[in-house]
Structures are given as structure tokens and as C-alpha cells.
Length: 276
Length: 295
Image 1 (cartoon, rainbow over the protein chains, first blue to last red):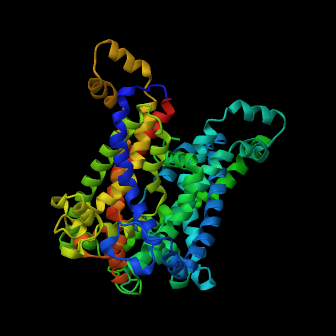
Image 2: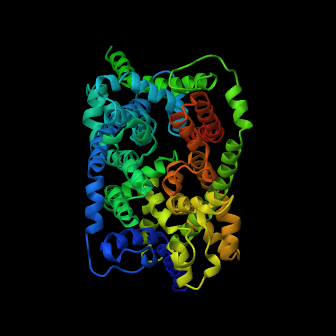
Image 3: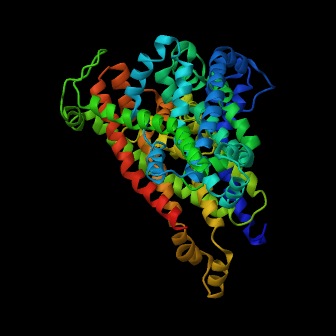
């Protein structure tokens, strides 16, 4: 509160106006979700619900439950494995620079930005020819895609973090006889818990929210939530109020992560623009 | 001796990731390029050499013209909108008002949500129905006696894509706010104080001192948001499905490849998208890594 001046209080007017704008979609999702089927009408969509009903949520959950679970089953291993890989890669690229490491790094980074349409056809052919015949199509294939295409961002975040850890710490450990893996396990890994939180959240959110990989790699029974919700919205039979409730269910896991761990979420976000 | 062992071990441990990047990114890009130069349409792979035919056909394809036009409109509205909104939000939040943290979290929360959720909700907010079936934003405008604002949103002829960009601004302006706020916080107070002592007013301080100092942030935002606009896909699908007036290259690629089985054409669109992203991103990566080593 260093620059507080009374004359600046008028700024609350635009700030509150903007806050209302950002909350409008949330308001509609919540309010519609809590209405009873009887009072749902597009013409009264802005009205508050008369009492609290769970009809819409129950209906949406009964339709989306399998894909919500598919998403959880997919996202947790994807986030954990890609964080571990990223940490190891980041450690090596920051502290054990081999010849050509600085040459390779930008090529890894570029992978973070590519439009996946440019690798989609080979990816689908590859999955269909290797993983699908042995029963690992669908969710396992999706997990693999998120791990592999997550390597650039997770490696970048950890590399930036480890680069800030003083080299003297490593040299001292080396003199004490620690080897490369020992230094990682006993010194860097314990220090990098905050980075792990950042990367886990980031990977969790992007895998949960992904649509493109999901829609080409999964079928009917392995759809994650984004695909199931989109299909629900495209169907003529399912009413808009159920779609709203379904949207909230689909958004809830990442929203909760954001509400409770927002600080780390922001750090992941800023890492995405390369500045760690 | 043990130094060598460590060195080999580190190369051994990182090689699976490097190999994965090499195969799944660069190998697959090369494979896509090869498909884009082939006659392949239909279920069975056909690598008969077609030269640049798929690319040439795209440039005379009316649907691809719609895509380019839509991408340009979307990029313009989305990038300019997110940068302006994000900048003003950041400046307001930088004034040290109470509740700053609350507003900051509020402006950022849409980033945690998927484009699909945003799209499904905005689809109903932007309901174009008229007369007594008015709903969504249009109904809100009518309550507020702002009837002149009532419009057909994404179903507006030729410019519908701009309405999709509004939903994207809602989702992404928090991001630009966050990077501008970080930029503003890194400007030392002494600079502003010195300018004030020299008699500059607040507006002049922003114009002549703060904005120029923030230009690297603006450049980052332009590139990051610009490359996102080239890739826009899920948001449009969730608002409107696959409709020709709202078509973009990413949707065309998906539909022509997986619904139409025109693999050669689909790959060509994918590669054109990649080239347009690379033009923005490669200089950006080089610039960022260069400034990093200078520090």
C-alpha cells in the first residue's frame, strides 16, 4: 500500500465495472445451475434462482461423470511424469551442460509454441500403428501425448529455476564426494518443491483443458471432459441449463486449483512467456 | 574418473527427452511436410509425389481465403483488445489501492478455465435470437436501455469472428495484465519521482517514461497473443461448431483431414500454420535467449 492516495479512490469505479464483466459468465453458470427445471427459461436467464435446486447439476453429472473420471485418470499421471522429466532435464541443462546443450535448448523451446496441427497426422498414424493394437489407444495415448509435448515447458521452467541456484553449492557437494544423481536427490530436489508445484499445476491445467489431442486420440468411452462437454453443447436434445451446470463441473477442478494455489499458477503463466 | 561418469550419466538421462523431441516434434514435422507434398486422400496412405500442388490449391481455395480473413480479424481484435485492456487493468492495479490482490485474482481466473467451457457459456451469452426470444447479453442490453448495442454476435455477417475474439479477450486479458503488472513493478519508483520533480504530470510520465520502458513487455504480449490467434480452434468449435463463416485454418485442417480424409491438404494447412507461427516465435526465442546470456 505504498502509494495510497485518497484521490485515487475513483479508480474503484472502473475496477468494479471490469470485475462485473469478468464475473458475468460465472454468474450465469452458477445461477442457471441452481435453478429448478421449472424456472429455467432463456428469457429469465439473468434472474436469481428461487431457492437452491440441484436438478441441473445432477443431470449434468449423470451425463458427464464417466468423462470427468477419464480426465482425472489422464491428467494425474500426465502431470506427474512430465514434471519429473522436466526436473531432470532442467537440472542437466542448467548444471551439467554437455557440449551442444546451449545449441539444443532453443530447439526444445520451439516445441512449446508449435501448432499441433503440424504434427497431428503423424501422431494419429503413430498411435494407430503402435499403441492401439496393443490396447493402449485412448487414454494411455493421450497421456503419452501430454507428456511428450509437455517436455519443452516443463524443461524450461525447471532449467530457469535451477540456473538460479549457486554453482558453489554443487561444487561443495562434489568435494564432499556427491555424484551427479546424489546432488540432484539430496540438494536440488528438496530445493525445487516450489517449482514442482508450479509445473504440476501448469501441466494439470493444460492437460485438463486440452481439446485438440483429446478429440483426435480418444473415442466415445475414453473422452475426457472437454470433448464430452463440447458434444453435449452441440447436441440438440440437452437443454442449455444442463450445459451451464456441466460447464461448471468441467471448470471446477482447475478453478479450485487456481483459487487455492493461484500464486503458483501465476508463476507458471509467466514462465510460459519464457521469462522464468 | 567420476567426473566423466557423471557427464555420461547426465547425457544418458537427458537423451530420452531429446530423442522424444527429435522424433515427436521434428520427425513428425518432417513427416507432415512429406504428407503435404503427396496425393494422399482417403483412408490408405498414398505418398505419390504431388509437389506443391496442395499448397497451390489452398491459395486458390475460397474456404482458405475465408480462413485467412477470419484469422486476420480475430488477431486484430484479440491482440489489440487484450493488450489495451490488460495494460489499463495493470496501471489501475499498480496505484496501490486496497483490494489489489482480490482484483488481480479476479481478472486472472478465466485463464484457469478451458476454451471449451468459455465457449459453451459464451455461446448462450451471445445468443443472437431476436424479438421476444431475446436472451444473453442482448437481453441485458435491453434491460439497461442500451438497445443500440443489441447485435447478432458471432452470427453477424462477415465479422462474426470478432465476437469470438471478445470471448478470447475475456479469457486472456488477465494474462496481459499480469505481465504488464510485473513490468510496472520492475520500474524503480525513483524514475517517476525524478520526472515529477522535473515537473512532468502523470500522463507525461506514462507516455515518455513508462510506456517506452514497457516496450519489451508489449513485444512479448504481441508475439504470445499473436501466435495464439493463429492457433485458435477450441473456442470457435465450442461457440459455433464447424461453421463456414467462422472457419479458421486450424478447423479446416481438422475437418478436411479427419472428416474429409484429405490428408495431403490437411498436412499442408498444418505446415502453413507452423511457418506462420515460426516467423513470430523464432526471432522471439533468439532475442530472449540472447538477453538472458547478457544478464
